[in-house]
Image 1 (cartoon, one colour):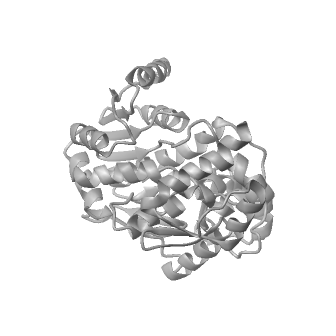
Image 2: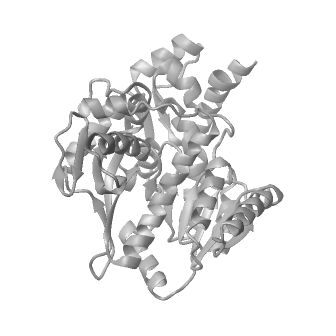
Length: 392
């Protein structure tokens, strides 16, 4: 598997040469549909957008409405291809699709259990989300195993709980995703709304925020407006200068009302879009752009990360505002509250607290350590005991 920087420079060569850039979206649920729509809205003739899944007829219907809407907006410039017959539970099937498509980007927006926001169950009962990690890892594991088999060089993005999933794959010695989407990107806009109003800033893009935290703090800050006692790493600048603002007030202001249904996936799709678009913009304009992404380079939690195309070669690196070791410490403290004690040697380690809470709330016994080879059996345990048992 090539390094991220090697992949970025392969992409640069294709962009500079005017070649087609192929973006493959694995799974065309709500996240995938939103993402496809956002990418089409770039009106970029250099992009070839391939949607991948089992049911070609269903995907074609979704593609048709997106194409029609984009044409009404006079934005339909990208090619869209439907690649059906791909079973995400079958590594050989995924590998065949990858060899055929030869993508430059891969976005995994598939879900093991579709149509349910897991947090609607886990937050109210457990105040944690990490319990679902075995469900989140399974299809991504298959995609990345096929990725390795196909010797794929695509820049890869994972959508589901990347804070733990990407480190889990890396610790197992498997190919792993380059980036994760979501998480911090859901918080930063809320912070910008408050800061812009307080300082009468007209352009939200002029506010520069750097934030370090895991998925737990995305949830607790957006729902409850506090950090649960963890002092996060947060910088808020305007025109290069740190703003004099109480961070607790910023966190408190993040609790704005939002829908709890599938419309929330606009945010996750936008995070995927932001990663792809930031890479394309940085390379095309020879600039550097900071993004926020969970699981990047197999690190636990969420980080600010820079795509730097100002030199002769493109480089990706962790934002230098904070030492990496300090960012790792904060993320480990953050994700512990989400039920993850560690990710090590191809396994996740649940906290004792979440094991106890699952037993008390659902009468389900989860193991302390879940090896990646045993993830499917624990995923089935969670589906039977935490999801389907509630629906009977």
